[in-house]
Length: 140
Length: 79
Image (cartoon, rainbow over all chains, first blue to last red; front, side):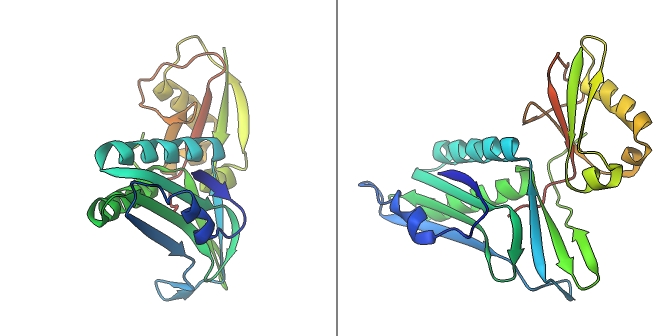
């Protein structure tokens, strides 16, 4: 399951599709909105997406993870729009026969997502709004 | 040929434009297009950005075709 969503996702719901016969371990990463960054208070977060490409890039990462690791399924749900502090930004679930591959693949999906998927955070602070600039891929 | 350009996040805000359509000679490369866009939008010269063609990251020597959608956006910061 690959999704961009406006509402807070349910981990239970995402887990439902991963209770497969060959699955004995599901690693779950949950990213949440932090109330401070570099000593500054963050009141809310806005996330902008290039929807079409973000979905395609997340699907490419899912397929790569399935090829590189011994895992059965990968689900990625990322929020867009305005989020409050403490809300879920992102859930990654990786289902595998055993824990080791599930953990490794989960880490891979997360790092690739942060590097490649066209999503941008803007922090809303008492001083105003600031775009968060990522590392990104080697570009033009 | 006509191509569509999309701008996102900080680029969209700084340039005050979210998309535009421009006319180019056949087989223009991404690199040549970026030169044209930097003349149109001076602020592009001082912004860091990445380029995608038809929702896929593209290299500077990629040749463009009629109807291509080129996206310019800042280094990503999701997750």
